[in-house]
Image 1: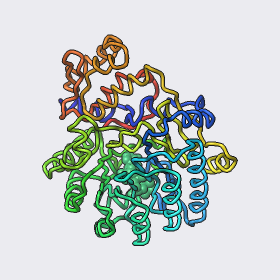
Image 2: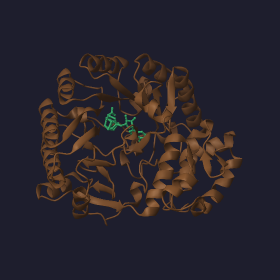
Image 3: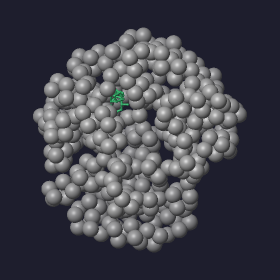
Image 4: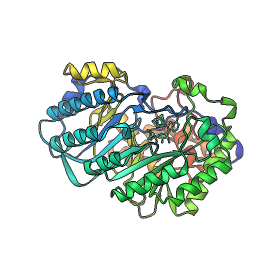
Length: 451
Ligand SMILES: C[S@@+](CC[C@H](N)C(=O)[O-])C[C@H]1O[C@@H](n2cnc3c(N)ncnc32)[C@H](O)[C@@H]1O
Ligand code: SF4
């Protein structure tokens, strides 16, 4: 790929395809009543995946793109935990029986803000109301800053098996610029104590494209993080969307790396992590070759959901909490983002669904194509179309739109197989976008840059 194409990639605006249709195309047609019917229709023996959103943090990282709010006291968190428990009970009642669960994920915000007693109450409710299968994965997102032994102990007792630690960048100057001071020994101590508590499956989140971040910073960060030997990395390009996340406007925009620098940074991460024995997974993950994520990739079983790349193959993901998204066999449903409204709805006995999208046959077909591309960087369009009762000719417009990408080295087409070469991995979202029936190329960009 030429430098021009790489820079074009860095400035193109396309979704991350954690779902299809993507969240901006959800609407009010899906309500709590719809979701209740959808839940009731899920076969009783079908394994479920559960997600709980904890939208609170102790302090604000200025880059943050998550649904969260900063709190100075525990009172709103405790009140939220009560509502969350109520919602879990309502969903379990709608499901009518004690359903098998194979994956649990607590995300945020920072689930580590929960006090041990609330971690225990939520875990107890999940274990009582659901049949958490032996070997189920229970993952928690961890802010290493201020992580106490009591919190770790509570998560271990709750059955947590995997922890994702936010690290981002190790340079104190970058940390100061984004208001996230996290000395290396804080991260190391979190890792050591998680290990000691038996939580040994560890992921580390890193970021590039942060203000004042240089290639050297990225290098030092990767080296320091590799020395901590996590099994997986997620490496996110900073998504600067100050029109949606107003606090991001407090960052010094002049200090943000440009498109070419971002490309060089992500290439540096890729080179260092692959040289250190990690396998590149999809767009932005890395895993040790013997990690279940790398094994799933090798076996064509890798999946993508709202939490990123996963081995979770449950057809149903139920999201609890404000802003949480559920992916049910019938479609997507997102809870209301506003916390007082979330509380009001749940406490009045209604599910807190604000919007969503029922899937059409065409959505399912395009979703399958986009998921394989995002996971495998390659898809046999004919085979997937045939499995959905149509042919590759259904996508002649997409194949036409891909022609310029072939010349630029972003993809190859062999028969009806579309492949993104490993060196053009960053372009996979652009290739997916050609299969996205909802994306209007002229619409004002709401998504962050592609690299
Ligand atoms: C919910 S946080 C992880 C747990 C905890 N809150 C923390 O930050 O340590 C999820 C991850 O999203 C990434 N992230 C947050 N804001 C982002 C943004 N604007 N662009 C890209 N990645 C972002 C960070 O890598 C962060 O670790
Ligand atoms: S990056 Fe994590 S800790 Fe920082 S504000 Fe966002 S959710 Fe909170």
